[in-house]
Amino acid sequence: MRRRLWIPLLIGGVLIVGLFIARSGPEPELASERTAVVATGPLQVWVTGTGKVQPAAQAELSFKSAGTLGELAAEVGQDVKAGQILAALDPGSLDASLLGAEADLIAAQRALQDILDGPTEQQFAQAEMGLAQARDDLRIAEYRWNNQQEGRRASSDTIRGAEARLTLAQIEVDQASAEYNALSGLPSDNAAKSLALTKLVGARADRDSALRNVNWYTGRPTEIQQALLDSELAVAQADLLQTEQDLADLKAGPKPEDVASVRASLRAAQAVVDQAQLISPIDGTVMSVKHGIGDSIVPGEVEIVVADLTVLHIVTNVDELDVADTAMGQLVEITLDALPNLVLEGSVAGIDLAPKVGTTNTQYPVRVELEAQDILARVGMTAALSILVADKQEAVLVPNWALGFDPEKGEIFVFVVDGENRERRTLVLGLRNDTYSEVLSGLEPGEILSASIEDRPRGNGGFFFGG
Image (tube, rainbow, N blue to C red; front, side, top):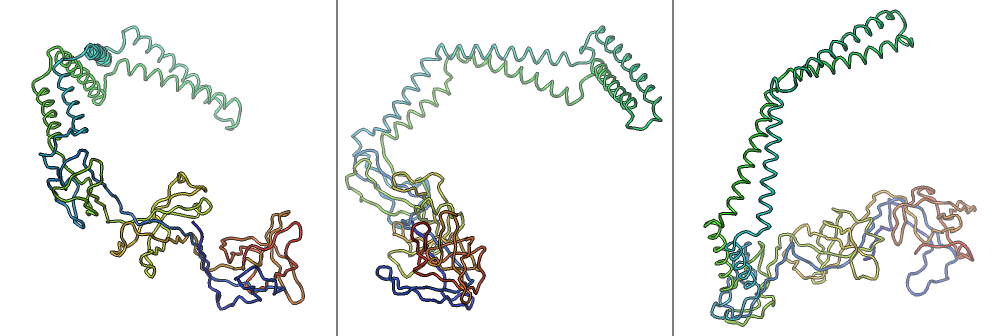
């Protein structure tokens, strides 16, 4: 994955000029100085890669057993539905065992034998434990129901004690209220008055708590509370009846309908052994059919391929240095090797969180979906991708060859020419490609930049970033 970068030479009517060194051959030494005028304009940054056109989903169908193809209801280009039978082996060629189907048959036979043998000791123990738990749940529900009814919430002694505590609490309120009222003429921040208020508030809280206790002891459940109590009791009673019935069923042995159900499963497994079919698991289009009727079939060999062509996509690998700039929905230009003059458009539809295993450098798979499903694009075609990761319409631009780096200060700088004066200027950069960089601060459009052979490093310091 590499970056493809684009910037026009003529930007905002300002032409970037200067003495430019030719790009072919080794770095020339003919020009002693290069100059350029700082300009503004658009800057695009692209990340490029390659991949194969793939369908939204694909199913490769193969028989599990050897035999002769007896039926074929699929041809290349045919649209099929999920569950549709596409091919079947000749029943007369199925003398060899169908390993997968026979395993299902054995499992069904074992299930029938288990139900005929009756429950195990472990099943009986579990049923007994369930019955004991159900009885305990019912006892708790009955106790809660009885304890909540009117006249049953407390004894007469408990009620008299609660009423006495309420009387004492009311006396405390009256005394605290009198003490506070006696200080009513004092300012609100008076310590004695504040203490009296605190005492009054506490007394009222104690009185209210005592009142709630009396009301609960002498009251009855609300309609909603009673309904909940009734429901809880009814559920506990039903659970007990069910667990009793479950235990009785275990002791009585298997029911005829249960035996019939297992026998039906056994017959279905036997039917699979008696025949073999290929059934499409998805809605899609038949991509390939390998054999015709009468041909011999090799187990495990792909016979029919069905693909969902509703959404074509391409998976490419993006380098770790570029994946942070890649985002969902970004524009992608797609060029097929088979159709180099046709540019299709797509968008980023998925970015893996885990890197691809087995690559020498760290790369992340990125899924690109074609916006329009062009009939010229076919599954398996090789495609070149360009992902637009940055697009700024108005940027202050500087050619990379004019940039220098001071490793001691960690600064990027240029030399600005103003008449006879030549000034070193520190820059803050934004977007950058192989040719140009965006200047966030340090330069203004129209200023002239200069870089000469003498500016190249001798010892510490670095110059330049690119051509």
